Amino acid sequence: MLELVNINTYYGPSHVLQNVSFEVKKGEIVCLLGANAAGKTTTMKTIFGLVRPKSGSVLFEEKPIERTLTGDIVKSGMALVPEARRIFPRMSVLENLELGAYTRRNRVEVREDMERVCQIFPRVRDRLKQVAGTMSGGEQQMLAMARALMSRPRMLCMDEPSMGLSPMLVETVFDTILRIREEGVTIFLVEQNASMALSLADRGYVLQTGKIVLSDSAKNLLTNDLVRQAYLGGE
Ligand code: ATP
Image (tube, rainbow, N blue to C red; front, side, top):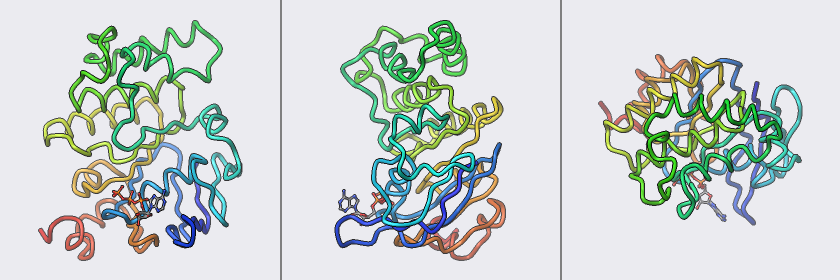
C-alpha cells in the first residue's frame, strides 16, 4: 500500500535518509523504530511531501507521490498524525475536527464521520466545545488521531503517538490504534517506545542514523539482540 524505494533526503549538506526502503501492506500495522535524531520524523515528512527527497520514490497504492502536494496526498487517502500532536490549540475541539475534513466536499458524509469518530473517541465527543489547547496531553493525542480520521483515510501514519504520555495513556492510545485498524485502516507508526510499538505491530523496521538496519516480524524484533540492547534497555 505504501512503499519507499531508495529514498535519499538531505537538509542542506546533511544526508539524513540514506537509501531508505520499506513497505507497508494493506491491513498491516508496521512500526519504524529509531533513537533520537535517527530520521523518523524526516521519514514522515518525506512521505507527506513536507520535505522533498533528492532521489528515490514514495509509492502510495502503487502511484508515485514524491512530487505530490501534501493536500493532494491527504485527498488521495493517507493521513498524518504529526509529532507532538500539533492540534490547533486556540480552536475548539469541534473546529479541529472540521479542519481534518477540509479535503471533503460531501457534508452528509462528513457528519457521519464525525459521529463515527466520536464513537471511537468518547472523550472527544464530551469536549466538542472546549478550547483544544486546554485539554490534557492524552486528550490532545486522541483529538489529533480523531482529526486525522476525519479525512476518511485508508492509511494512517503516526509520528510518536506515545510521546509525553503516561504509561496508562499510552495503553489507551495503542488500544485505539488497534480499533482503528479493525475499521480497515492500514497503520504506519514511528516510535521510540519500542516495547509498546512492537506489542502492537505486525512488522517493524529499525532506522539507525538514517539507514534501515533491520526488518523483521514484531515478534522476532522483540527478541532481537540489537533491538533489546538499543531500544528495550537491554531487558
Ligand atoms: P526525534 O525523535 O528526536 O524527533 P527523529 O528520528 O524524528 O528524532 P529527525 O527529526 O528526522 O529525527 O532528524 C534527523 C536528523 O536531521 C537530526 O540530526 C536532526 O538534527 C536533523 N534535522 C531535522 N530537521 C532538520 C532541519 N529542518 N534542518 C536541518 N537538520 C534537520
